Amino acid sequence: MKKVFVKTKNVKNFSGAINNLIDKSSATPKMGLIYGAPGLGKSHTAIWWATKNNALYVRAQHKMNTRWLLQEILAEIGEEIHGQISSLSDQCKLRLKLKPQVLIVDEIDYLLDRSHTIEALRDIHDTTGVPVVLIGMQNSKNKLGKYQHLYDRLSEIVEFNSFSKEDVDIIVDELSEVKITEEAKQIIFENTNRFRQLIKDISLLENLAKTNGLNKIDVKQVKGLKIGQ
Image 1 (cartoon, rainbow, N blue to C red):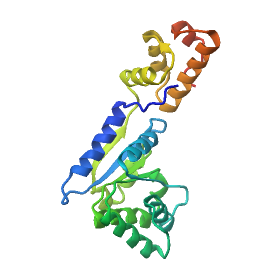
Image 2: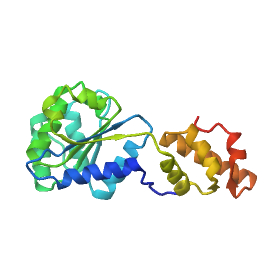
Image 3: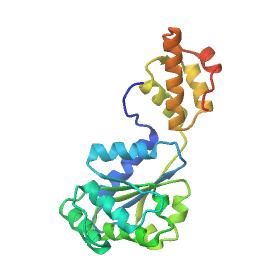
Image 4: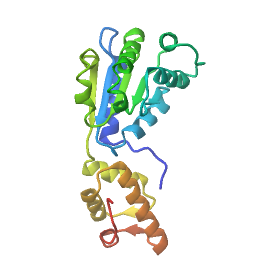
C-alpha cells in the first residue's frame, strides 16, 4: 500500500475550518469542533494537519482530569511540568501567548462530563487567542450544547460525513499498489464507508493480486471476498 495522505472532502473541510479560525480577527472566537461517526479519519486527519502545521495535538483519555490534560498540553509544547493546576494553567497560557500554536484536542467526548476541564480549554482560548479545535464523536455537538459559554465560541463546526463515491475512488486509486477497475470500486463503495474498512479492503485486494500474480482486480475477484467486513 502506498504511503500517501489522501485528501478527501472531509479532509478539505477540516483544513478549511482551521484556516478560517487562524484568519479570524482577535474579536472573533477561534474555537472549532470537528465531529462525526467513528472510522471516518478524524484522528488521522488531525495528526496529519498538526504535523504539517506545527500544531499541538493532544488526545483526551478515559478519566482524564484538568491537571492531566494540562500536563499533556505542556508535554506536547515541550515544557517542564511542575506545580498545581493553577500553575500549570498559567504556564500553558504564558507559553501560548509567547509562541501561539493551534491546539487540537482529540477524543473530546472523554471530557464532556468534566465541566472544570472543559472550562480550562475555554480559558486557554480566551486568554491566549490561539485557535482551539475539539474533535469528537457524532453526539459531541449536542453534548457540548450544555456548555453554552463554550458552545457560543464555536465559530467553525465541521461534520465528517460518510465517504462519497468520488472519495472512495480517490482513496483506492491513491493507496492501492494494484489497479482496481471501476466496476470493482463500485462494489467497494456499496459495501464500505469507513476509512479503516477501506484500508483493510485495499490490503486484502493487494494480497490477493500478489498471491495470484494479478496485475489488476476486477469484479470477479471482489465478489468472492468479504468486502467491508
